[in-house]
Amino acid sequence: MNRTQLIPALLLALTIMIGSAPVCLAVTGISTWTQEEIKALPEDYWSALKRDEGDWTRYCQNSSKAFSQIYGNGVGNSYDLFLEEQTGAAAKSPQVMQAKTLKRLTDVVCIPGKSLKAFSGVPLNRLRLVAFKEGALRIIPFDILEFTALGRVVLPSGPEANPRDGDRTLSDNDRLFFMAVDAGHKVDKRIISEHLAGAKNILEIELSYRQDGEKGWIYLTAFGDDTAETSPLDYIVFHARSSMIQTPFMLIQTKARKHKQSVVPTLDVCTWAISPSIGGLSQDIHNQFNINMIMSYRGGITKNETQDDIDLHMRAWYDGAVISFIRVTWKVGTPLGIGAPVAFADVLASPFSLFDQNFLNTPFDPSIIIKNFTLTLGEDMHTSVLNAAPVSPYRILTEKDRKGVIIDGKSPGTTVLLDNRVKTHDLWHVLTGPAGSMCMISGMNDFCTQNAAFRLEWSDTPAKIGYYRYSLGLDNFINRQEHMYLEWN
Image 1: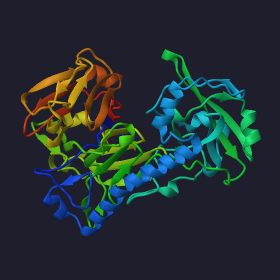
Image 2: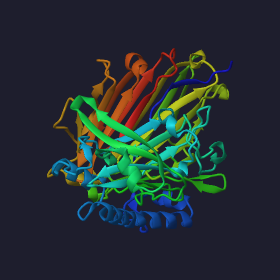
Image 3: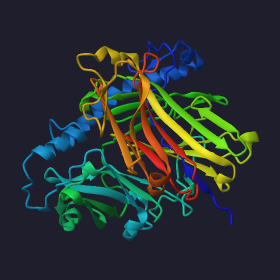
């Protein structure tokens, strides 16, 4: 029987990708572009970019208005609601059987369809998610991502979309997504059936963080038809034309490229801005996204590819209310093109974070031709970060150095900030400064933890300001189900 083998790769982060001497494009207010980049794409692309970048402010304002209409003045987004829940008085409603104690803001909850068997076969448009929050029942945003019986994800949009592979009913292979911050108090399910007309079946879902004794509840509800109330909140928007992801808390824009006769979105990130609603300045401080993939083959041949060599265009995507799921694939170069692996990059973007995992897919045991595999991924900063020093400099914080390394462009040597010599499952660092903060977490499964060499390297020069990069090296492919991921929050 033919088997597909998986060998480990890395999640590609959405970070800025700009060439030398970036300039502000007159039609945009956040992103920066070189003259060469401007000339490479048609005018209608820049018109779409200007429109969508400008729409971010309007989108955030409309989202805040909708939030306030549901939860009251002063609560304009999930962050405001989270702070109110943590600092406000305990729930006193007689309908509350047990008060929510869950303290999760950025977490996305994913529940497999096989855990929701009571709803198997129910049309997706008849399902709603309900929580009891702030003294009332609330309809909560959620997404259900369909998967076929063979595990293929159903993505309705894009050049290689496959909407016909889905049947729009809940199955064991599908996945339910929602934000943990939307969980509420525990109530009697009869309250839902009494207050929401047409509710036929109700499942209580308890979320818990056992280490701290935290709990929260949410209720999946099936209705007799598709006319039941839906949530007016849309936590995430993907603009394919301008290759841009927007949430109330961040804007991520990737560099479009010409592909055949059209302009297509890619995974080549060029802008990442943090919203003022969560302490940011809507300012892009990133300069260049750097990826270097090295395959050493038996026989002494080495193949080296960077982001400029890779076809990173998006093949298909799902744009929901809570998540955007995007798939990117490309062929990895091999000697004479023999047995070329196909790399799969699956991007899961949510209101506060981005999770991007890569696998290399080969039709045979990769160790037959591959001796070792090294992947280095990182980014350097825009020159504007130097303007913050010395009053409020940007820093890189790690678990070993909570005070942080100052970004000043004056550290030419390469320093290893973290490594996995102690066989830890994850490493992390934080980039922080006046424009906002992002936490990067890198995790590995058991096999990579024991067999891969992994470290966080750092240098800081005028040519590569604040340059961090994670480097993964592996020469053991026995398991072939191993993986490593990176998550940006």
